[in-house]
Image (cartoon, rainbow, N blue to C red; front, side):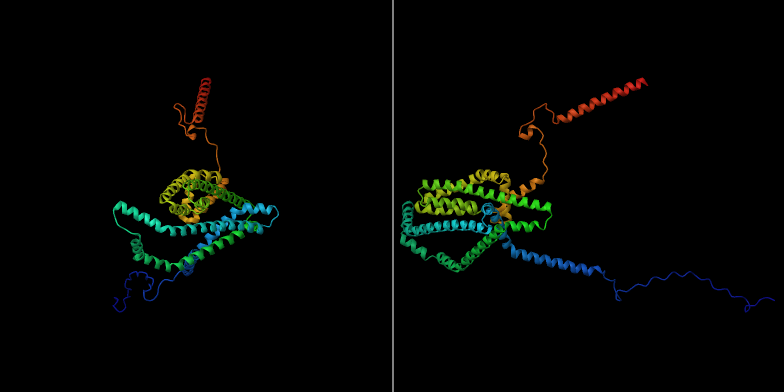
Length: 421
Protein backbone atom coordinates (compact mmCIF):
# COMPACT_ATOMS: atom_id res chain seq x y z
CA UNK A 1 0.00 0.00 0.00
CA UNK A 2 1.46 3.23 -1.06
CA UNK A 3 1.95 5.88 1.53
CA UNK A 4 -0.32 8.87 1.39
CA UNK A 5 0.42 12.54 2.06
CA UNK A 6 -1.08 12.31 5.55
CA UNK A 7 1.17 9.52 6.68
CA UNK A 8 4.41 10.79 4.99
CA UNK A 9 7.11 12.05 7.50
CA UNK A 10 7.69 15.88 7.54
CA UNK A 11 11.26 17.20 7.02
CA UNK A 12 12.32 20.38 8.99
CA UNK A 13 13.14 23.37 6.78
CA UNK A 14 16.83 24.15 6.39
CA UNK A 15 18.11 26.79 8.93
CA UNK A 16 20.72 29.51 8.19
CA UNK A 17 23.37 30.44 10.84
CA UNK A 18 22.39 33.51 12.87
CA UNK A 19 25.22 36.07 13.47
CA UNK A 20 26.05 36.89 17.10
CA UNK A 21 24.29 39.83 18.51
CA UNK A 22 26.32 43.05 18.82
CA UNK A 23 26.98 44.36 22.32
CA UNK A 24 24.58 47.03 23.39
CA UNK A 25 25.81 50.57 22.84
CA UNK A 26 25.05 53.55 25.05
CA UNK A 27 23.46 56.45 23.35
CA UNK A 28 24.86 59.93 23.89
CA UNK A 29 21.80 61.01 25.73
CA UNK A 30 21.72 58.23 28.28
CA UNK A 31 25.22 58.74 29.88
CA UNK A 32 29.01 59.27 29.40
CA UNK A 33 32.35 57.67 30.40
CA UNK A 34 33.30 57.95 34.05
CA UNK A 35 35.98 60.58 35.08
CA UNK A 36 39.29 59.10 36.30
CA UNK A 37 39.55 59.19 40.05
CA UNK A 38 42.94 60.95 39.99
CA UNK A 39 41.85 63.88 37.82
CA UNK A 40 40.07 65.95 40.54
CA UNK A 41 43.01 65.59 42.87
CA UNK A 42 45.41 66.64 40.09
CA UNK A 43 43.31 69.72 39.30
CA UNK A 44 43.14 70.74 42.95
CA UNK A 45 46.92 70.26 43.29
CA UNK A 46 47.60 72.35 40.17
CA UNK A 47 45.36 75.15 41.42
CA UNK A 48 47.04 75.03 44.84
CA UNK A 49 50.51 75.24 43.27
CA UNK A 50 49.46 78.17 41.10
CA UNK A 51 47.98 79.97 44.11
CA UNK A 52 51.19 79.39 46.10
CA UNK A 53 53.26 80.72 43.19
CA UNK A 54 51.15 83.86 42.92
CA UNK A 55 51.27 84.38 46.68
CA UNK A 56 55.05 83.92 46.73
CA UNK A 57 55.50 86.37 43.84
CA UNK A 58 53.35 88.94 45.60
CA UNK A 59 55.21 88.49 48.88
CA UNK A 60 58.59 88.75 47.12
CA UNK A 61 57.54 91.99 45.41
CA UNK A 62 56.43 93.42 48.72
CA UNK A 63 59.57 92.34 50.60
CA UNK A 64 62.21 93.10 47.95
CA UNK A 65 63.12 96.37 49.68
CA UNK A 66 63.59 94.64 53.03
CA UNK A 67 65.67 91.87 51.45
CA UNK A 68 67.98 94.40 49.81
CA UNK A 69 68.37 96.20 53.15
CA UNK A 70 69.26 92.91 54.84
CA UNK A 71 71.82 92.17 52.12
CA UNK A 72 73.44 95.59 52.55
CA UNK A 73 73.44 95.10 56.32
CA UNK A 74 75.14 91.72 55.99
CA UNK A 75 77.99 93.11 53.87
CA UNK A 76 78.35 96.10 56.21
CA UNK A 77 78.61 93.70 59.16
CA UNK A 78 81.28 91.74 57.28
CA UNK A 79 83.18 94.97 56.67
CA UNK A 80 83.34 95.91 60.36
CA UNK A 81 83.88 92.31 61.54
CA UNK A 82 87.71 92.61 61.73
CA UNK A 83 87.54 95.72 63.94
CA UNK A 84 84.88 94.22 66.20
CA UNK A 85 86.74 90.91 66.53
CA UNK A 86 89.99 92.69 67.38
CA UNK A 87 88.30 94.70 70.12
CA UNK A 88 86.51 91.61 71.43
CA UNK A 89 89.80 89.68 71.54
CA UNK A 90 91.10 92.28 74.01
CA UNK A 91 88.31 91.53 76.49
CA UNK A 92 85.57 93.91 75.34
CA UNK A 93 82.06 92.62 74.83
CA UNK A 94 81.05 92.29 71.19
CA UNK A 95 77.93 94.38 71.67
CA UNK A 96 79.91 97.28 73.14
CA UNK A 97 82.62 96.93 70.49
CA UNK A 98 80.04 97.02 67.71
CA UNK A 99 78.37 100.05 69.28
CA UNK A 100 81.68 101.92 69.46
CA UNK A 101 82.49 101.15 65.83
CA UNK A 102 79.10 102.35 64.64
CA UNK A 103 79.34 105.41 66.87
CA UNK A 104 82.65 106.34 65.27
CA UNK A 105 81.16 105.91 61.80
CA UNK A 106 78.12 108.02 62.67
CA UNK A 107 80.18 110.80 64.27
CA UNK A 108 82.51 110.97 61.29
CA UNK A 109 79.62 110.96 58.82
CA UNK A 110 77.63 113.57 60.75
CA UNK A 111 80.66 115.85 61.07
CA UNK A 112 81.36 115.58 57.37
CA UNK A 113 77.73 116.34 56.45
CA UNK A 114 77.59 119.35 58.79
CA UNK A 115 80.86 120.71 57.40
CA UNK A 116 79.73 120.38 53.82
CA UNK A 117 76.26 121.73 54.65
CA UNK A 118 77.65 124.90 56.21
CA UNK A 119 80.06 125.35 53.32
CA UNK A 120 77.34 124.84 50.74
CA UNK A 121 74.94 127.19 52.51
CA UNK A 122 77.60 129.89 52.65
CA UNK A 123 78.37 129.47 48.96
CA UNK A 124 74.68 129.62 48.02
CA UNK A 125 74.21 132.84 50.00
CA UNK A 126 77.29 134.31 48.33
CA UNK A 127 76.03 133.31 44.88
CA UNK A 128 72.64 134.93 45.54
CA UNK A 129 74.32 138.15 46.69
CA UNK A 130 76.68 138.21 43.72
CA UNK A 131 74.07 137.23 41.15
CA UNK A 132 73.31 140.83 40.04
CA UNK A 133 77.01 141.36 39.30
CA UNK A 134 77.17 138.17 37.24
CA UNK A 135 74.05 139.19 35.36
CA UNK A 136 75.47 142.66 34.65
CA UNK A 137 78.69 141.17 33.29
CA UNK A 138 76.75 138.80 31.01
CA UNK A 139 74.48 141.58 29.75
CA UNK A 140 77.45 143.87 29.04
CA UNK A 141 79.17 141.09 27.11
CA UNK A 142 76.02 140.47 25.05
CA UNK A 143 75.56 144.19 24.33
CA UNK A 144 79.14 144.62 23.23
CA UNK A 145 79.30 141.57 20.98
CA UNK A 146 75.80 141.56 19.51
CA UNK A 147 75.13 145.35 19.55
CA UNK A 148 71.99 145.09 21.66
CA UNK A 149 70.58 147.41 24.31
CA UNK A 150 69.59 145.12 27.17
CA UNK A 151 69.30 146.18 30.80
CA UNK A 152 69.32 144.17 33.97
CA UNK A 153 65.95 145.53 35.11
CA UNK A 154 64.22 144.41 31.90
CA UNK A 155 65.78 140.95 32.10
CA UNK A 156 64.77 140.54 35.74
CA UNK A 157 61.18 141.66 35.04
CA UNK A 158 60.88 139.25 32.10
CA UNK A 159 62.19 136.41 34.23
CA UNK A 160 59.98 137.13 37.21
CA UNK A 161 56.83 137.43 35.11
CA UNK A 162 57.53 134.46 32.85
CA UNK A 163 55.05 131.59 32.72
CA UNK A 164 57.65 128.84 33.11
CA UNK A 165 58.94 130.36 36.36
CA UNK A 166 55.45 130.54 37.84
CA UNK A 167 54.75 126.92 36.84
CA UNK A 168 58.07 125.84 38.32
CA UNK A 169 57.26 127.55 41.64
CA UNK A 170 53.83 125.92 41.74
CA UNK A 171 55.26 122.48 41.00
CA UNK A 172 57.95 122.97 43.62
CA UNK A 173 55.34 123.94 46.21
CA UNK A 174 53.27 120.83 45.49
CA UNK A 175 56.41 118.64 45.51
CA UNK A 176 57.48 119.64 49.03
CA UNK A 177 55.39 116.85 50.54
CA UNK A 178 56.92 114.29 48.18
CA UNK A 179 60.42 115.45 49.07
CA UNK A 180 59.64 115.22 52.79
CA UNK A 181 58.27 111.71 52.34
CA UNK A 182 61.36 110.66 50.40
CA UNK A 183 63.67 112.06 53.08
CA UNK A 184 61.78 110.31 55.88
CA UNK A 185 61.81 107.05 53.91
CA UNK A 186 65.54 107.34 53.39
CA UNK A 187 66.15 107.94 57.10
CA UNK A 188 64.00 104.93 58.03
CA UNK A 189 65.89 102.75 55.54
CA UNK A 190 69.21 103.93 56.93
CA UNK A 191 68.06 103.13 60.45
CA UNK A 192 66.95 99.66 59.32
CA UNK A 193 70.32 98.95 57.73
CA UNK A 194 72.24 100.03 60.82
CA UNK A 195 69.99 97.98 63.10
CA UNK A 196 70.43 94.76 61.09
CA UNK A 197 74.16 95.41 60.73
CA UNK A 198 74.48 95.84 64.49
CA UNK A 199 72.75 92.51 65.15
CA UNK A 200 74.81 90.69 62.48
CA UNK A 201 78.10 92.04 63.85
CA UNK A 202 77.30 91.78 67.57
CA UNK A 203 75.82 88.27 67.33
CA UNK A 204 78.17 86.98 64.64
CA UNK A 205 79.44 83.95 66.63
CA UNK A 206 75.92 83.02 67.72
CA UNK A 207 74.69 83.32 64.13
CA UNK A 208 77.48 81.06 62.91
CA UNK A 209 76.76 78.49 65.62
CA UNK A 210 73.07 78.49 64.79
CA UNK A 211 73.79 78.01 61.12
CA UNK A 212 76.31 75.23 61.72
CA UNK A 213 74.05 73.41 64.17
CA UNK A 214 71.76 72.27 61.34
CA UNK A 215 74.60 71.03 59.11
CA UNK A 216 76.85 67.96 59.23
CA UNK A 217 80.48 68.46 60.32
CA UNK A 218 81.85 68.47 56.75
CA UNK A 219 79.40 71.19 55.71
CA UNK A 220 80.13 73.17 58.86
CA UNK A 221 83.79 73.50 57.86
CA UNK A 222 82.80 74.72 54.40
CA UNK A 223 80.37 77.31 55.81
CA UNK A 224 82.97 78.65 58.24
CA UNK A 225 85.56 78.85 55.48
CA UNK A 226 83.13 80.71 53.23
CA UNK A 227 82.35 83.13 56.06
CA UNK A 228 86.05 83.82 56.64
CA UNK A 229 86.63 84.36 52.92
CA UNK A 230 83.70 86.80 52.77
CA UNK A 231 85.14 88.81 55.66
CA UNK A 232 88.58 88.99 54.01
CA UNK A 233 87.27 89.94 50.57
CA UNK A 234 84.84 92.55 51.86
CA UNK A 235 87.58 94.12 53.97
CA UNK A 236 89.92 94.09 50.98
CA UNK A 237 87.29 95.75 48.83
CA UNK A 238 86.76 98.55 51.34
CA UNK A 239 90.52 98.91 51.65
CA UNK A 240 90.83 99.37 47.88
CA UNK A 241 87.97 101.87 47.88
CA UNK A 242 89.66 103.80 50.66
CA UNK A 243 92.91 103.94 48.67
CA UNK A 244 91.11 105.18 45.58
CA UNK A 245 89.26 107.79 47.66
CA UNK A 246 92.61 108.99 49.04
CA UNK A 247 94.18 109.25 45.58
CA UNK A 248 91.11 111.00 44.17
CA UNK A 249 90.97 113.46 47.05
CA UNK A 250 94.66 114.37 46.70
CA UNK A 251 94.36 114.85 42.92
CA UNK A 252 91.32 117.10 43.17
CA UNK A 253 92.83 118.99 46.09
CA UNK A 254 95.86 119.90 43.96
CA UNK A 255 93.56 121.16 41.18
CA UNK A 256 91.38 123.20 43.53
CA UNK A 257 94.40 124.78 45.22
CA UNK A 258 95.88 125.61 41.81
CA UNK A 259 92.63 127.33 40.79
CA UNK A 260 92.42 129.09 44.19
CA UNK A 261 88.96 127.64 44.92
CA UNK A 262 87.86 128.10 48.55
CA UNK A 263 87.19 125.16 50.87
CA UNK A 264 89.60 122.99 48.89
CA UNK A 265 90.22 120.39 51.67
CA UNK A 266 86.51 119.82 52.32
CA UNK A 267 85.76 119.65 48.61
CA UNK A 268 88.58 117.15 48.07
CA UNK A 269 87.23 114.91 50.83
CA UNK A 270 83.76 115.19 49.33
CA UNK A 271 84.95 114.15 45.88
CA UNK A 272 87.01 111.24 47.24
CA UNK A 273 84.29 109.72 49.41
CA UNK A 274 81.23 110.32 47.25
CA UNK A 275 82.85 109.16 44.01
CA UNK A 276 84.01 105.88 45.55
CA UNK A 277 81.24 104.83 47.92
CA UNK A 278 78.19 105.92 45.89
CA UNK A 279 78.20 103.80 42.73
CA UNK A 280 76.90 104.82 39.30
CA UNK A 281 75.96 108.43 40.12
CA UNK A 282 78.64 109.11 42.73
CA UNK A 283 81.07 110.59 40.22
CA UNK A 284 78.52 113.12 38.97
CA UNK A 285 77.44 114.11 42.46
CA UNK A 286 81.05 114.45 43.53
CA UNK A 287 81.98 116.68 40.58
CA UNK A 288 78.88 118.90 40.74
CA UNK A 289 79.75 120.60 44.04
CA UNK A 290 83.34 121.68 43.13
CA UNK A 291 82.02 122.94 39.80
CA UNK A 292 79.38 125.02 41.60
CA UNK A 293 81.92 126.52 43.98
CA UNK A 294 84.38 127.20 41.16
CA UNK A 295 81.62 128.91 39.15
CA UNK A 296 81.28 131.50 41.91
CA UNK A 297 84.92 132.43 41.36
CA UNK A 298 85.09 132.28 37.58
CA UNK A 299 82.86 130.42 35.09
CA UNK A 300 85.96 129.21 33.24
CA UNK A 301 87.17 127.54 36.44
CA UNK A 302 84.01 125.41 36.40
CA UNK A 303 84.91 124.19 32.91
CA UNK A 304 88.44 123.34 34.08
CA UNK A 305 87.02 121.34 36.99
CA UNK A 306 84.59 119.53 34.67
CA UNK A 307 87.36 118.58 32.26
CA UNK A 308 89.59 117.34 35.07
CA UNK A 309 86.78 115.24 36.60
CA UNK A 310 86.05 113.57 33.24
CA UNK A 311 89.72 112.83 32.51
CA UNK A 312 90.46 111.56 36.01
CA UNK A 313 87.38 109.34 35.96
CA UNK A 314 88.61 107.61 32.81
CA UNK A 315 92.05 107.16 34.35
CA UNK A 316 90.50 105.67 37.48
CA UNK A 317 88.14 103.33 35.63
CA UNK A 318 90.68 101.88 33.21
CA UNK A 319 94.01 102.14 35.07
CA UNK A 320 93.77 102.67 38.83
CA UNK A 321 90.68 100.72 39.83
CA UNK A 322 91.46 97.46 37.98
CA UNK A 323 94.97 97.28 39.45
CA UNK A 324 93.98 98.06 43.03
CA UNK A 325 90.97 95.76 42.87
CA UNK A 326 93.06 92.93 41.46
CA UNK A 327 95.61 93.29 44.28
CA UNK A 328 93.27 93.70 47.24
CA UNK A 329 90.32 91.56 46.18
CA UNK A 330 92.40 89.18 44.01
CA UNK A 331 90.16 89.06 40.95
CA UNK A 332 90.94 89.86 37.35
CA UNK A 333 90.25 93.48 36.27
CA UNK A 334 87.92 92.30 33.51
CA UNK A 335 85.98 90.18 36.03
CA UNK A 336 85.71 93.16 38.39
CA UNK A 337 84.44 95.41 35.60
CA UNK A 338 81.96 92.81 34.38
CA UNK A 339 80.70 92.09 37.90
CA UNK A 340 79.96 95.78 38.47
CA UNK A 341 77.99 95.96 35.22
CA UNK A 342 76.08 92.77 36.06
CA UNK A 343 75.37 93.95 39.62
CA UNK A 344 74.07 97.27 38.32
CA UNK A 345 71.79 95.51 35.84
CA UNK A 346 70.39 93.19 38.50
CA UNK A 347 70.08 95.38 41.61
CA UNK A 348 70.99 98.91 40.58
CA UNK A 349 73.34 100.94 42.77
CA UNK A 350 73.28 98.34 45.55
CA UNK A 351 74.34 95.62 43.14
CA UNK A 352 77.21 97.74 41.86
CA UNK A 353 78.38 98.33 45.43
CA UNK A 354 78.41 94.70 46.57
CA UNK A 355 79.16 93.00 43.24
CA UNK A 356 82.95 92.92 43.57
CA UNK A 357 83.17 91.48 47.12
CA UNK A 358 80.43 88.96 46.31
CA UNK A 359 82.20 87.75 43.15
CA UNK A 360 85.56 87.67 44.94
CA UNK A 361 84.08 85.58 47.75
CA UNK A 362 82.45 83.17 45.31
CA UNK A 363 85.64 82.84 43.26
CA UNK A 364 87.81 82.16 46.31
CA UNK A 365 85.32 79.64 47.74
CA UNK A 366 84.89 77.69 44.51
CA UNK A 367 88.62 77.75 43.82
CA UNK A 368 89.16 75.02 46.40
CA UNK A 369 86.97 72.63 44.40
CA UNK A 370 88.57 73.22 41.00
CA UNK A 371 91.24 70.66 40.09
CA UNK A 372 94.26 72.26 38.44
CA UNK A 373 96.96 70.61 36.31
CA UNK A 374 100.55 71.43 35.41
CA UNK A 375 100.80 73.51 32.27
CA UNK A 376 102.92 72.08 29.46
CA UNK A 377 106.22 73.79 28.73
CA UNK A 378 105.18 75.28 25.40
CA UNK A 379 106.37 78.69 24.13
CA UNK A 380 102.83 79.51 23.05
CA UNK A 381 101.70 79.42 26.67
CA UNK A 382 103.98 82.41 27.35
CA UNK A 383 102.81 84.28 24.26
CA UNK A 384 105.73 83.30 22.02
CA UNK A 385 105.44 81.51 18.69
CA UNK A 386 106.86 78.01 18.19
CA UNK A 387 110.05 77.80 16.15
CA UNK A 388 109.99 75.98 12.85
CA UNK A 389 111.28 72.41 12.84
CA UNK A 390 110.27 71.83 16.45
CA UNK A 391 107.69 69.05 16.69
CA UNK A 392 104.31 69.97 18.08
CA UNK A 393 104.23 66.94 20.39
CA UNK A 394 107.82 65.76 20.84
CA UNK A 395 106.86 63.25 23.51
CA UNK A 396 104.30 61.68 21.19
CA UNK A 397 106.87 61.40 18.39
CA UNK A 398 109.38 59.77 20.71
CA UNK A 399 106.72 57.30 21.82
CA UNK A 400 105.88 56.47 18.23
CA UNK A 401 109.59 55.97 17.43
CA UNK A 402 110.02 53.60 20.34
CA UNK A 403 106.96 51.61 19.31
CA UNK A 404 108.31 51.37 15.72
CA UNK A 405 111.65 50.03 16.93
CA UNK A 406 109.89 47.44 19.09
CA UNK A 407 107.83 46.36 16.07
CA UNK A 408 111.00 45.90 13.95
CA UNK A 409 112.61 43.81 16.68
CA UNK A 410 109.49 41.61 16.89
CA UNK A 411 109.52 41.13 13.11
CA UNK A 412 113.18 40.08 13.14
CA UNK A 413 112.54 37.58 15.97
CA UNK A 414 109.61 36.05 14.07
CA UNK A 415 111.73 35.75 10.91
CA UNK A 416 114.56 33.97 12.79
CA UNK A 417 112.17 31.52 14.42
CA UNK A 418 110.62 30.72 11.03
CA UNK A 419 114.04 30.01 9.53
CA UNK A 420 114.89 27.63 12.38
CA UNK A 421 111.61 25.83 11.83
